[in-house]
Image 1 (cartoon, rainbow, N blue to C red):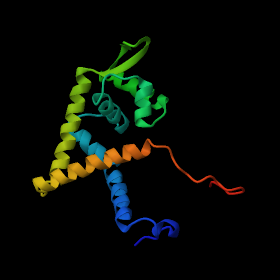
Image 2 (cartoon, rainbow, N blue to C red):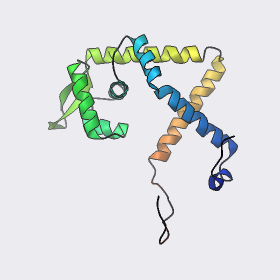
Image 3 (tube, helix red, strand yellow):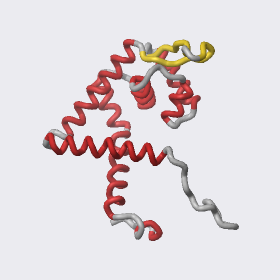
Image 4 (cartoon, helix red, strand yellow):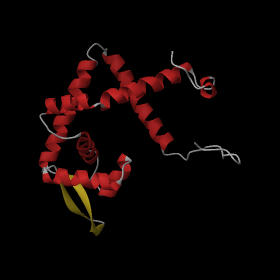
Length: 174
């Protein structure tokens, strides 16, 4: 078993340690470039990971401002701006006037963008379905419920203020 930080080993249950390790492994597996290449091959598209993330975020909401999209994705606005320019050139998104402020613009999917998102979702769902083919309907229902709860709790936790102890005099933060 890998070494644990003695300060946290006693205060964190073995289940939490295992859950954190499994989530870390799943994040790695889902985000690796080989997985993305496979997803794009099945979907019949040639988009990078950042473009797919942006398209999926736009598809899950009303047209939104690029700055709001950047905040939602926790990235710099310049990163989103670069990606949006590429997606516009590819015909996947268009900029439209913001009805609340005509000086501002929102980004929305084109028909091609919506079709791309649908193909990505379908390819992704087929991959999940294959991976979970041996699970019973009851197990899938439980897993879905636990994932919904996990996401809800993670969002609630990440949006709450960070309660860190104040550094003592002369203490280093590094």
